[in-house]
Length: 115
Image (cartoon, rainbow, N blue to C red; front, side, top):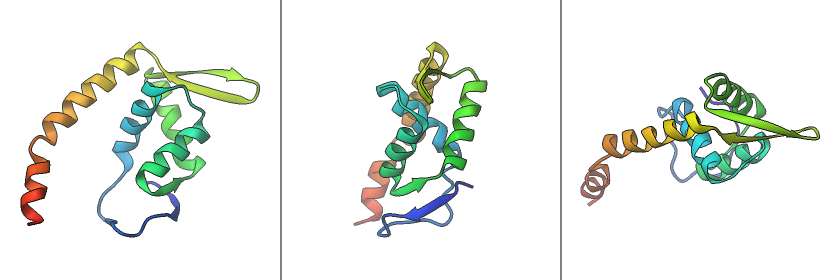
């Protein structure tokens, strides 16, 4: 389970949805746009989800992706800037296809259930 330091948005929450597997996808997606530090990734993903991600959440996920050879980093002083490598780009494309298939029609279903 993802550790959340502080809730920023309270309008819609679910105590049952686990952010865990989705975090890797969000990291890969953000890194496909630009090179980022772990801190910047935590801020961007946290802002998207309405939470603040702790270092204990983001850095283990980055390490796992690095060990899976999906991302790389370069140092600039004490900072590490993460980016996708070719395997990460390919995996992200696969995830886009997987999610689009998986969630196909979900928007229509949600609209119908809210009427």
